Image (cartoon, rainbow, N blue to C red):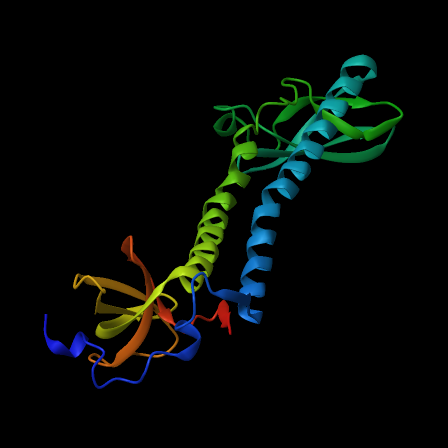
Length: 242
């Protein structure tokens, strides 16, 4: 490791990093935005589950109503699209329409102008369903699991926010040297290396809005017990309160 990773010749340690540990920290506007975004992301599964549950309950009520007091007629297939059949039928000279998911394997068998039996409520023919198959309350059970994919990035964001706060509160300052920079999906990704108080060379990196010059020096903070946990200073999400 060459001497350019040493603090000699670089600016003095930021005054706010020289105080006793743990340091006091304060969240910034960007940090608040990150927490709000994380909260929204974690609430989305709850909202989606409520929407899916309401839809399922509506389907169950429709199914039960059609089972107990419905009439049957013949409807005509208008089209089948994405495993959903769209149809029309006539009741007392009035035309009504409906649609329903088709059972697996039935889609290729239905064509435009095909006739299918339709069950409907005499008091409200708009409530209807193909008589050949019933609405299945479990047909969209995979949808109950889909909302939880939002927890993966949400948990990652919470972990990132907590880690940054801990690093600012407990991290030891060191001078790092930018070792490389390349474009990333959201801007630029730069890597750096620094030497710990024990003389161990550690590496880190982060995202940037602008390209970073290789060889440039920056301040970082790291956890002495795990130098791989490090963060370039200053941090956008939190600041140290003197």
